Structures are given as structure tokens and as C-alpha cells.
Image 1 (cartoon, rainbow, N blue to C red):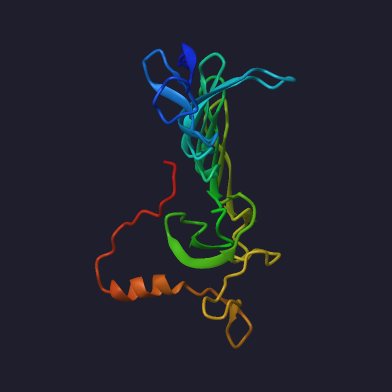
Image 2: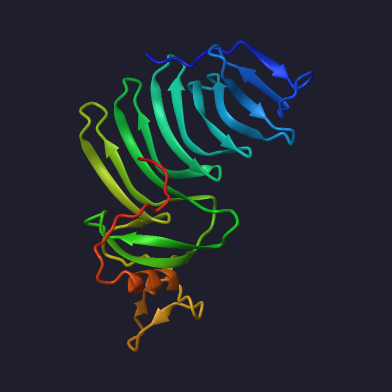
Length: 236
């Protein structure tokens, strides 16, 4: 079993030159749970929650950036067993999240896409439902909320570890393979960069338009050997 370390004491800023309002020192001498002079959580943190109203307690460890969770966070039961791994960006779920039974068996894997709070539009990659590694196109979409279900969700049999069900989402819209990127209700519409409207052909069918930056990149690298690029997402 893996246990969260017990911390020795809380030290205030008084009498010290460090730029922290408060922090704690672990038994290993690490500086944790720092709060800056603006009252924002920064750096590595460990959180503890007692059992409440039938909900089990847990310990959680990860990283804060300007008072928002950032990167990988791991959650443990109060017995020290790992029960969750989550990735965060801008304080919201982003990338892969995995959840485990008390016996340590993977029971669910989720995929999320966080929304930049400074933006209302986003450029999103579209992948083939039958081959998630195959990039189909890029679309510019209007985004709302803080995070969206985006990508493949996999549910496992907690007894045998076999895949029971998979779901594919595109910005919270469950994909069935029978609709395009905009879904049955037209909530997600490709945006033409030059006009700001959904592009259509002579038959009235919507056309997915790539951002100019993507077109320029493809033109510059046409005929060259394809290289793998990172998309900046977190997770495994």
C-alpha cells in the first residue's frame, strides 16, 4: 500500500524571508502547500478530505498554478490505495483521467478537453471514429463551459478487467458514427475563418474549412516525410 506522508507542522511567513504567506514542511524536508502573498495556492500540494455523509474520504496530491490545479493529480483512499489519476489545465479536467477500484483494478478511463478561459473559439482536431489515430480534419468551434468530454471513454469489467463499453465524444457530443462533426442537433458547426460563417457548397452541404495556419503548414511541408508532432495535451 502507498501512504500519503504525514506533515510535521505549519509555518507562517512571520520572521522568514521566503515569498510565501504560508507553507508546510514534509517529513522529508520538502516545502509543500505554499500560499503566495496574494493568497493563491502554488506548487506541490497534498489535500485531505475526511469521510462525509456516506462519501469516502481521500488524500490527493498534485500541483497548483495560480490557485488552479495543473498537470497530474493522484487520489488515494484513506487506506493508501490509488483510486484515481486526473490531469488538469486551467483548473479543469484535461486529457486522460483514470479511476480504479479499491483493489487497484482500472474500471474507467475518461478523456477531457479543458477550455481556455480567455477564449471563446477553439481549433479542434477531428479523428476517425474507427481509427482514433487517424486525423481527419481541423475545425474551429465555439466553446462553452470549463471542460468538455472529448475523445474516447472506456469502461472496464472491474472483476476481469475486460472492456465492457466504449464511447466517443466530440466536445460533449456523443458520436455514433452516423453524424458529422456538428452532430445531430447542429450544436458544433465548422466555422469559415474568412467569413465567420459555416461554409457550404452549391448543394448546401457544409464544408469543413481548415485554419489558414494549417493550410500554410501543409503547403510548406508538402512532399516532405511526415513527422509526428505533439498537440500539447496532457495525459498518457
